[in-house]
Image 1 (cartoon, rainbow, N blue to C red):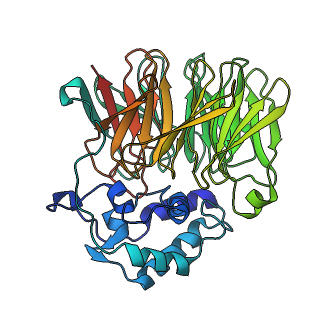
Image 2 (spheres, rainbow, N blue to C red):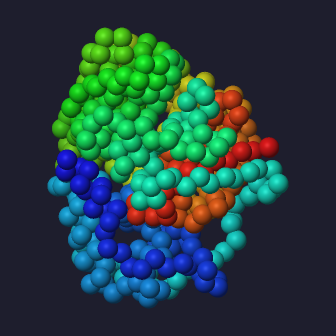
Length: 442
């Protein structure tokens, strides 16, 4: 119950009146441009990790009705956030050494003048080469968290605040809500298995559930942790990780064949446990059955081999890189967005080589990577650039697709395997009214 209370409170926090910065001459509306006011380095990366995961650092947050915030204002607001999401709270997403006074002093020093609007500095796709459509979610205050495409081509969306799964019919734009038969369900991640069944993680009840569309039945699995990500493998096991587990850090699976549950301890260090981390994050399964997971605060890529019960740990070379939602290619190569380090990473398990690509726009905050396996495309959702990015690994080139609405923090992506359409929810809290965007490339 307390986790959900936190999320609702965050969404309703009193903020300064929203500033329509995009309507002001020469004033930027992009969060990336407000983050560019801060000096690059470890302190900025730590700030990005601690303070931009739920909402953007935009005009509303960074300024008070176009005026620079005084240091005392920053201290008060940082203290509020520490009270909701500090390392000792029930939703510990902020690192243990975050200090309100030091943070306030640092922000007051650098956030002084509104950023000037600039042209998008990365190569954009020709406007006639793609189509973007937005679909308003029926409850504007909802937080559309995760998305998946079902076998009929409709989009499934977890409504984190409404406790339902929305199903969007792209042909008509009609939404239908599917109630989850639990109070305060707090649905997060959603995936579909090979049978078309829906597997959903429920944060507040600490459950994994399965919905079977063929008979309309729900199955519950008590996994005993506040879960973050899930993914099924070829043997019918649905893997998950414990978002805030650290002593011990846990991953596990539900065996769909008999409902059995197994949890596995992840090797970690005292420094990660004591520092508020490691915060298990993205999780995917490779074609060979290897389970890959990122640690947001731990700054590591973790691999688990179910055949040998052995772990692999890969540390990112830059401290506080913030690896988030990864994906794995058909060749087993792992692609990871370095959120705070503004890079896309490629890890090849066969060679142990980690290659990094700097995003060509500053402070875009790459949040999620999804691979279109049919078309060999790598898509990246950004947290601050109001854009979707396409990366061509052969040419090592990025292409930008600007989104229609400012404030589009993209947490998740889903790709329609038939049409190649890319779906994304606007997932800032607080942020713009709940919307879903579809990108179709000609």
